[in-house]
Length: 542
Image 1 (cartoon, rainbow, N blue to C red):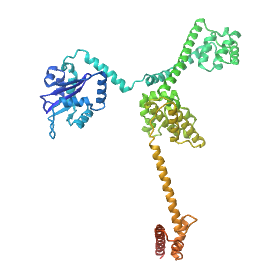
Image 2: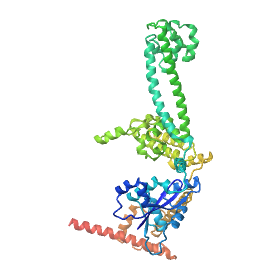
Image 3: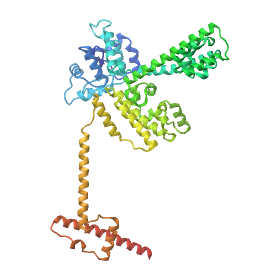
Image 4: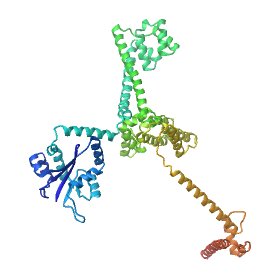
């Protein structure tokens, strides 16, 4: 049986014929060793047909279809024209070797061409890929590499759907750098406090903020030169005149040691560096807020920019976070505690990174787990909206935040929250008013209305039937109840009202007769059941 090989290159489709191969020669190791030698490989595999792509856009479309396991019309025409024709009702005397089994199954479904994909075929296609430029005539050196590079870039860009404004890698790097800045600024500020405290120890108790302390250390320098002339500068830094006067008084009665001018210069330079780091940290935070409003506006509106960025960073990307179920999102960041609990068969953690949200802190101790589960649910919805929606806005994030607030009030005060469908409808209306387009199944609304109408009609019919049955039984004013049924059964047993249903009614309509018979049958069944129960009691008593 002849074996044809289909190779999808960056410049076009190639069809190769592998002849002179029997079952004994289909040893993958032998083929693997002979693939690198063009003289040996060229005797076995030869070019049968080649169909070049028309343009770079055509190559991209063909590659997208092949990667998804779909056969295009161009590939179908190429195979039907190049492969031997098979008569109807007869088996093909050849098979087509493909690299991907998905496209092979699709080719067989559409054209009935037998396809195969195994290690032997893959080794042959590897040899074709290695020596492809030797098989194609009039192919200049470097043309194939250029085509591969251009197609690779366009294919990757189309797959990623590259958007400069929605790159979550920048958020991941920014939140990492922000955490690093926090650690470094804290450690450097403590070093400034400890260093300058040898000269002015009383300043630590007056000023608690690290940034303000570094600013004061740079401004004061030598405490002995601090006087009323520098009061305005101290007020500008501290924002409080009383504190500024307290600093001046403390400097006059300070117990710290004197420092040389070189030491004061070093402390001043180091304080400047700490101030620069703190200012850069503020700018980085503003940058993070701006990027989160572009990449994940709903998640940022729901849980905050910093916590949302940490969730994206821990998951790896916004797409990975959107794929996570809410149960996984709830314990992101607490994996070590989770596996330790599973190993020791203890209690699993209730929350991970979302613990830093203000909602968890505001909830009471017994409701923290519930709040974490509910918040993780809403965060999962917000991340999916941000990831897969083309329109960026905070409509859904604001509504989801309102839902979390209402749930918090429900746990604390018992105030019933709104239903989720009502909140989502309001969010959809807001998104539509802001120009966003979201797909809504509008056909479900009239069907629900119809079902409600049907239910109401059925209820009306049941009420009418109940009224007619009550009239047939002689109870015009009062509805049936369990006690009346028992009384009626006892009265029927004593024979007081055997024909009561026939005497009190007119028999003009045939429908009323049927209803009388039904009611009479029901009552007779009740009487029979009561009499059988009494007989059983008598037998048991005897």
